[in-house]
Image (tube, rainbow, N blue to C red; front, side, top):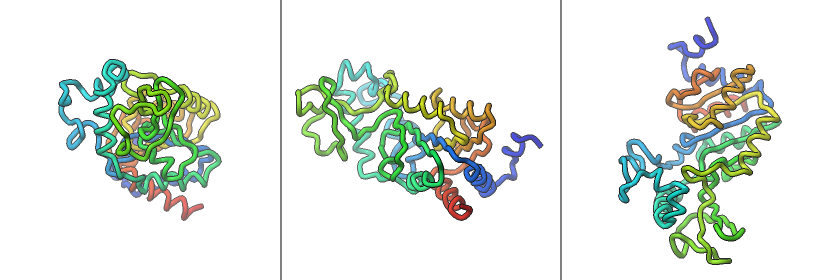
Length: 268
């Protein structure tokens, strides 16, 4: 039976997948973890789209899509409108905390020579849970920066902001969250760290809770698969990279990662 057929056999249980994933993790020394929105679902963070999402209609109350409202072009034309929706998202997520999956990744790091977490999420939960080697590719919603001067600072939430949009306390300039809006380039620092990490190499890629539609998400998986390195996906749904992965755990992130951590602890 082929490797693909073994992986996709109907009788293969989630428990069996976890055991296989544990064996791959035990054999690894350098691990790249890539996380998306599914990573934070167990923290109670709402999605933007879909049933129950913050914006499950085609258009917002302002008659535009949420993607247009949260775009760099809109921020340049009407920063107050972009801030309106950024503030809605922050308010909906206020009070949420890292979940057991974030904590499991932070603890797993101690078992490896390199354990780098690359995340699409802007909630800052990986760092809050104790992960140290984190690349926040889309920034963090809690870090604010002035568009006119070098002033930047971190806030716990937006409740204490005197006004929306905020003004810089140093120069009075327009302030924005340090996140990548739709249509904007990824931050140079994060891209450089990502490229340098890939150049150093990993022997296992673990992808958690992302549909992997961005090229920089799919590329490490494709590279690992073509070079014979181990690949694991954790996602309740199949994605465009599922067929490339040695193991596809069809479970939520917190459940799968805590189970993997327990097995790694037991067999270390």
